[in-house]
Image (cartoon, rainbow, N blue to C red):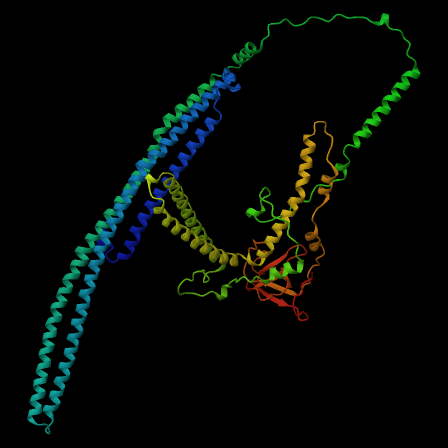
Length: 609
């Protein structure tokens, strides 16, 4: 079976198939590369683990190594080190014997494939040119035949007409002869071109194309065989290290068999045996002969009463040592915030800002206007806009996130290059003989400009991404929540200090002064009080979700397609509607994602503050 005879008309499909075969080979190369990386990382972790538990010199562990169990453990660590070495061998062999060889082979395949298909396209273009010549000659022959026929008919009409002069008849006859001669010439030319085309077509489909397709078939079969050989090599590389790994495991088993509990017990005896004889029985000594029984019941009762009073006083005085702890309550937990660097508990604390009225915060929240595109308003066809607004929201979010990640990678590359050039410039400034510092100054300026441009691009795409994810309405509110977090952290810091002071006190008593107690009791609660006084919004209608919405950002709520919910605040022109699922779940969703049914007696949403 030959591609040239069986697939003579499948030029495009063979082009796709050979490209797919090369991609399969590249995929296998990538697989082997990742496997080699896994092996080398695994070997590195094994070596670090073995090194971590190795016995350190001049330490107590070195004295413990005289026990057979400890010796076996150290032998196991050494064997694991050798075991890691075999995984490094696997990684090196896969890199050199499979990855490097197949990479060169893939480059050769690409070059050979490119050459063969270039030759095939050239042959196809030649056939197209011959076909155009044949069509042109055929049309000319057809046109000349029609002209000759019309000239012959005209001559016959002139010849039959008795009113026409002889000169006109002769002129018509000559014109008909000329047209007939032109038709005969076109016929001969058409016949010649047709014979040439048939010959070229015969050569094309029975010689040139079969030859090219046979080369492609040989190339594809060679690729398949090479892939099979690589799979065998892949297995052989693992099989080669199996005996050595088996020896390592045998060594661990042998060390485990060498453990002797009796011997270790004897070693303990030898290490701690004192050599003294155990003490004998203690003799009884009688002191009753010299005792005078002069103790009265009254004195005994008084002494017991005195002891009780002492105990009571002691307990009471001890209770007075901790008056603050019994009254103090634990500080409230800090409010949740997003994972920005400013929200890290151990980070720098922001200064306390003056609290704004709740109405101002809600107004700031409602003034941001994200643009969420509805599925029905997406444009189809045409050039792709820069912000990917022609895509559905989820696809657009993925594209924008991918673009942001690419730009961040480019920024990191530029920053690394800038740091390297900065170090080089410092070296040149300290040692002028090594180079001129001014030679890298221009490059540093260019890199800084590139970084600034890339950061502007990142900000632009992050803005679009924030619009898609619905972050814009809650963006102004996040900063205030973070400032509230800092205030809570500042308020809770003295409490932890008090606990540290109590733990560090040697006798367990509490010795803080009154200023520390006052500092603990002060807790900012203005922001919380504002929200405690907020009344729930009334229901002004219902809505039905046309599309699903994740609601991952603060202030939003997730909805499922077809879900019916209550509307508590209309769209104010910013593209967001506030809805409620139950008494505890409410938030904003894009207006284009829902269909709103307002009550007839309701004119609009009201904000209660």
